[in-house]
Length: 604
Image (tube, rainbow, N blue to C red; front, side, top):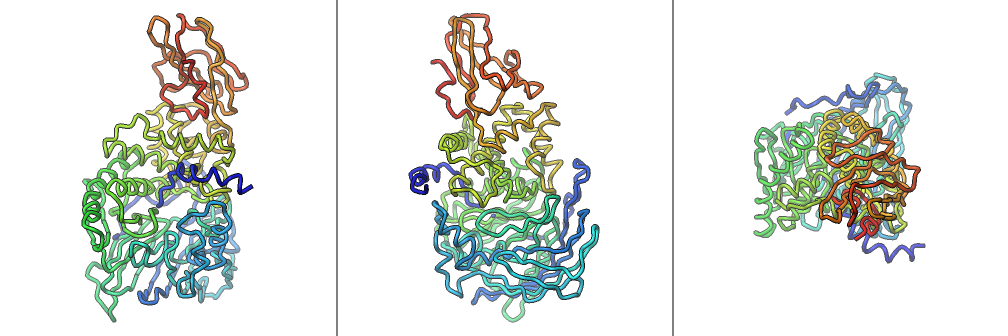
């Protein structure tokens, strides 16, 4: 079976726009991470982290002291809790290692590199002690998850305190996290601490770290980091001690990050640190190595005003950025978003720097403020980010594209016709191929939002995105939430769109069956229903636009076209008459519908 797939991999790898993804904090007023007033009965858990970290930059090992106050806002009694120990993935024989060595198209950044790590190159987090309200409790490390048996169940509404001591080692950089990456950045510290797993109405989300995305509990972070005095540190949060004292050759960096669901940082002795103020917005921080070439450093300088424009674009088109700072940091293995920051590789052309920054900055809204579960709904953050960042790039760089999402449509359609597609309900780790994951999460996810604009109208989509942000920021929205938001904006029934496009592999295919003088017959070939935009050119040279409503929508999008009778999905054909003799017919002239066979969309 693998041999049959391999020839298809090369073009899928090209098609998947799998952009590689990832402070300084006094407590600032932000929208509270509290149950949304738009969701009656909604609840979410809350955490408060206090951590003291002592880093040895010679051995790449660090000791941690963590106090975590956990508030059980659920109606359930909790008998166990779970922590993520992400660094344990970077050990020979881990699930990440074995999966990478057995999947048909491994991520080239991982390959079989984990299997070759030596004992002083692996990553680990070892929990030495754990107490619940002062009582020692049992715990067991199972791969990248810490399973914890509680001394006493946590009751609904109860707050408990967990005190932990742990040792850890930073792995050689393989994926996202690590030390001494290929660009020479000393420390890219992401997924670096024992992180409490999320519990919601679906239960625990203690997923092993195999290679994909993350999910976290909203809360406040207070982090004290002791590191060699010559290191520059940037990342999540607001710096509390700009004039910190030095002791024993180390400086303590004290960060506070209110109302986030993760904490990341990077450190290097050669960082240049630039800042730029967004008018009526946050301070932007830029950390990049002084060892870059002059041309690369110039690109980082030119990136800074463009990042201001991007921040303004996203704040205008989604919702206002609520924090007082954001940092763009050279580090990581491509690009990955984190709270108030991103880690990107820095040896890029100017255009590439703007592109990756646009994508990762957009993730601040689609995942870090609209905190979907990336493991279950990866298309919501990757796809929606691709949608808005492509539009931002088109605007900021004056690209003037007719459809900024054209490549996403092309990628999705090729995959849909390949026979390898899986539904978007697939868990992010359980796609048969990495390339299928990339095309679906990034491209089909982007098409989901772009095509929703075709279904409900572009202005309605813009209003939907803003209301979605207003209603669900600082929460954990689900796929139904974006659709229900669109329904509230438009008054249309849209559940069919979510079901067919995100929960099945049904495809869209409409065609022209026949044209006889002034009579047109269309046919639905694919299983997925859609309303139809149609342009008719008459023999006298004039044109007329028609709109065929989908009956199950129970309404129409705003349009200047001639609205004709509804088309009920179960009827495979649809016939109507025009007022004049017909020269040609074009289905979906703007090509905003993801029709998998456009050859039958016109009679030319």
